[in-house]
Length: 175
Image (cartoon, rainbow, N blue to C red; front, side, top):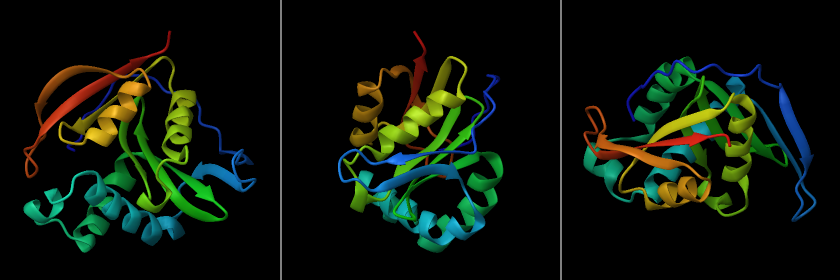
């Protein structure tokens, strides 16, 4: 999605949160992104986008190399990045700018294990009282996830070029 700036304030971030995974007794950690995460994160990000919206990347001409460049020059520059690490391996990441969630992706091999939920919960700890984001209207998995987490669709539009895809603006407000 294109860049959308927010005027919201954010809380001072914690360096990391760590605990045992309740389901399998494995150690999990949410920490700030490091340069050595780049290859792992960009690969699962690219594959997660393809899994969520099959065929979209091919139709738009997106490649893994292009995703690497975009991540390095845009995503990593414009956001505070958090990585969900399981057994010392990055398996999810959150890109947030103030109260705007720009990216939240989980390696498809680790879907439905609470990783996205943990990253979203972490984003809530960084926010004062409001989070917002855009997602593709066709991304049913993301839309269901955010709606389950009390995000409300407030605007429907079209993402900026080159995507020019229908999108949805979601907002969450602390009660």
